[in-house]
Image 1 (cartoon, rainbow, N blue to C red):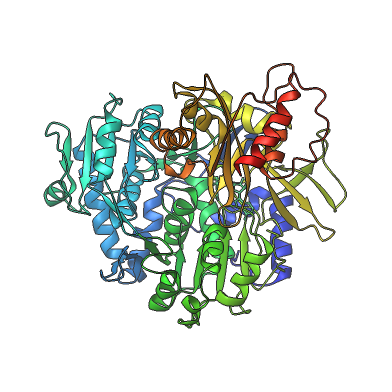
Image 2 (tube, rainbow, N blue to C red; image 1 turned 180 degrees about the vertical axis):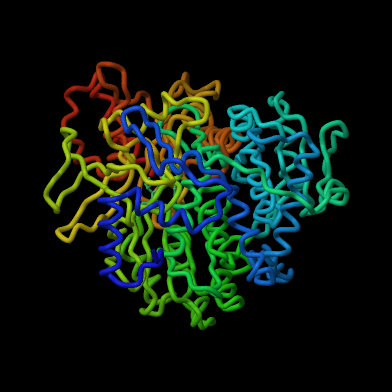
Length: 634
Ligand code: WTA
């Protein structure tokens, strides 16, 4: 079977085959990879118990499919292009042969440190080649990688390291981001004060800044690589062996370590990369995400490499040294597919158009969006100025939990409508649920987005807590996977994602749970209680608004606001800082003591004249006070 969809008829044929004969459909696609042993069964599942297995009994190693398989005909083709933070530093082109060499050496370094199949390795690195090599080397020896975004604070880092009992941390002396240098090793040192599970820290050098070294624990990567052999045979993995853990915010409690396994993730990311980006051999593809997030895992590394593509990894930020940086890189490498987030598009659209018109952008064929709903204005700006009115936009909807893209147009095949993620990919059966938990059967409707049948890259569990996995995703609508998103569907069956329906807020494309932020604030000795809600923000999509009650009087509110944001930065990271803080003498509560966030959300949105029924509140008088306070403070 051909896996590339070129016409709407092919899309429809593939879609109906995947729906009616899913096992036949997916086994045809899986057969295109190398397996040292074929699977015994394609798919077994129980949606009620949240149990899934794909290609079970099959054995493979994803890095053989990402790298070794291409050595026959693509050894000298560039696999990864590293574009540094500063445009004055040269890019590095890593061929498939070179990548193989580097990953094998790194695999031997890991083995030399006593890392075995099934061990967990935390990776806390900036977007430098060592990050890609570390991820792939873990996969090659069967260690489970847990990449932690290098913007997280030391306590967020230690919580994640401990949750998965990581034995090793791979980091660097520091990292460059725009005109800042970040002291990553210092953050790791701080985090490891609370992590008895970690035996070693492997340190890459990037900024060449002075760092503290603990000789019994820390190993310079350069020294270890110098001694390592470049011969390594990939560890055969069961299809259902875990490949990685990646943390995502929950609406309550600690972050959830989503577990993805080998075979299904491989098949699905490869298939969706090829179709969603219409990747052709020789194309240069660029996804601007960080490998610390799922988008980077699936669509900088695994999906592109599985297809033998050339993929760019960019260390810097869109606005450094100026807001033309993205477009400069597009022209420099003649990028054919460009994939970014609405928050970056909005930030760049605000700048003078001369930063775009300086570049010709002629190489672009497909442009993509991911991470949050893209508003019509941003979509139109992107289409007109970057896509020059001719490149299809793929508005791709998916999640850390889904492993790969589930809903997206297929370029030059299916129609596109601004703000709509449009149609499900083959193998995906979305449904909308009404307020009573029944499936909306009419085409046109609005409800909560669920998925009916498993696809190969659905997360298998939450690390160490299967009950939480079941409870979070499979209990609200038994028999279905619940996404946490709301959506509407038009009369043509196209989906538009309207946003989260739980207490997760997406700020600049980053998912933030409200509970961990509130917990951080509440640690302040002067603070009694707090509630965080989101409000619309021109660039970030959403920003955070904190309502805070105090134990006593406060002498300097401005100082306290600063202290609150400092606490949040230290506990979670600067991405979770609040844009607005309002001190109040109480929070609206139900009789059972739950904070009524619906009311706070309306006040934060500036919509306080329309609060609906507040008669069920325990303390309705507090609402008036908060309303007045919000008008004064903002
Ligand atoms: C949101 C990112 C609208 C959504 C891949 C989802 C989107 C959450 C889109 C997952 C899109 C992602 N349109 N909303 N195209 N893509 N989202 O886990 O709310 O970081 O549930 O995965 O981002 O975020 P995550």
